[in-house]
Amino acid sequence: MRLEARTALYCHEFLHKTFAPNRFDLTYRIEVDPVVDEFKNLGIAHEDKVKEYLRTLNLRIKEIDIQQTDHDWQKETAETLLSEDYDLIFGANISDITESYLIPQLANSTHDDTRVSRPDVLVRLGRNSFGNPAWAPVDIKSHAAFGENKSNTVYLSPLETIAPSSDSSQVGRHSEEDAYQLAHYSCHLRTLGIATDQLWVGIIGRDFTQCAWAELDSITFGVGKKLDTALNKYLKDFSIASEITAASIIQNRDSSHHVNALPMMMTGNYGCPTCEFRDVCREEMEAFDNGSGHVTLLATVTPTKVQDKFPHISSIRQLLNETNLDKFGLESQIRARVWNSEVPEMLDPSKPLDLPSFDIEIDIDLENSQAILMDTFNETVDGKDLVYLYGYGLWDKSISSDWKRATFDSFSNYSDTDEGECEVLLAMWKYLTTQISLAQKAGKSIGIFHYSPHEKTWWRRFAKRHSGKPGVPSLEDVEIFCEKYLVDLYAYTQKISFPTISYSIKSLAPVANFKWSVEDPGGGMSLIKYKTAINPESDNQTREEVIDWLYRYNLDDVRATFAVREYIRAKFPSN
Image (cartoon, rainbow, N blue to C red; front, side, top):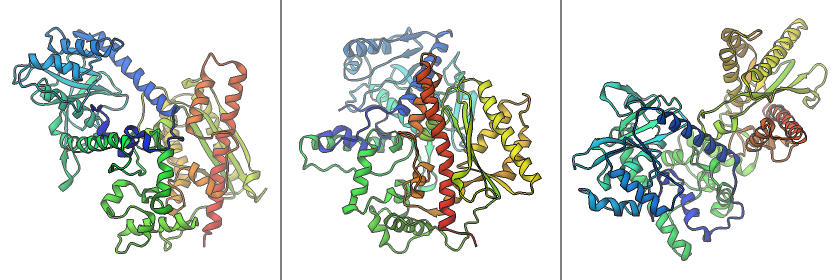
């Protein structure tokens, strides 16, 4: 069984369900995920853009037709790998047929029946010590090519020359996910005898004017006793993933065969938020240990934390009975108790919540075009990201003691342009500053609530992106505004344990008995609706319908923060 480049990154239960589908009820498998699809499409568009740029340079490029039969695709790959005529290869497919063509013509070349490799780009770097052509894998990514890390080094080369140079070193490191994929290709190339002696690997990132190179065996992760190279970590994880895959294939035929995998709440690009089996696994996790539930269902209790803090514990029941726990373990025990009782508790009862209260309270929530992509994949993605809708709710407590009687509305612009974004943010800025002025004149206190640092980030971006335009505040004005008036409700919820998997507003609002009025509320659906709204081919009726959905969805997001805040105040009244 040949496994692809992401195998070592995949959740073990994903591999289990993928290769032993007969052992599971996959009724709730997610066949289509618009968020994942959009992320993939953005990645493909970015890759196409980079390749188009590379074509304009003085480089000898071989583009292999990936639409031909697999045999011909692999055969052409082998011929190109042996050729002296090319600097770069697009569309290589290295598998069994490729190997059968290569091995007889190379020194120190053997089969690798565990891997299939399709790197975005292969770069020819002369010949290696065996005298064979030396190829280095390069992946094209829509995120940054590397991040800050003082213990590692990258070598930056302009795409015009692309080959790595020791004269261009800079502190930094590829992400672990990128390093794992590059390690997969490099191990395959090394077995075939066509890797570079230094195991060079590269990433062309969002800024595609240069390639960030590193020597694979020099990329390190972890500290102290946990310090290890990316290559070693990949090899260990790939070996485990291979064993799980092999066992799953056997179990698919023989239900009595054991597979060492268990559903757990996983984060990251290859975790639960992007997984087609997430709803299937969720049911299994809740049923774990006769309905006690798996311990990673508890908010903040990740598999990594479990391994570090209490590796012998798997279920919520076990955690409740555990003794000799550290601070994190004791907080996790509170979370376990709350999971069972469904009654929220303070994580540290000795510290007051101190949730502020004002005469006038305004709640705000913006919608930006790539919000769900960044929330899901935890990274800034390539492409236009614009604020197109900003909702608010204004509650004057001197008029009504019921937040549900607050005034709710929003500002919007669906032109998908910088000008449209500026119009929305400027309208909200004028509205909020006007309300602050009116409250001060009336001698009333005023506070503006939001959920997560998202809002502050966008106000700062507003000042920077639209600097100099009429009415746009300076960055200093924005900082003063944020410091004096904005209150992040998310920071207060972190002091409380709720019977929820996460602290997202979508998870907490139902605890406060709040429900969205629109069908299928969530970032995935809002992405679909927004794409429909800005699509020039959408008819007027369809466009009006999706804009109405987004309007109601956004205002319900605003109402949700009101509901959660008042629920918290009722449960944990201030002294």
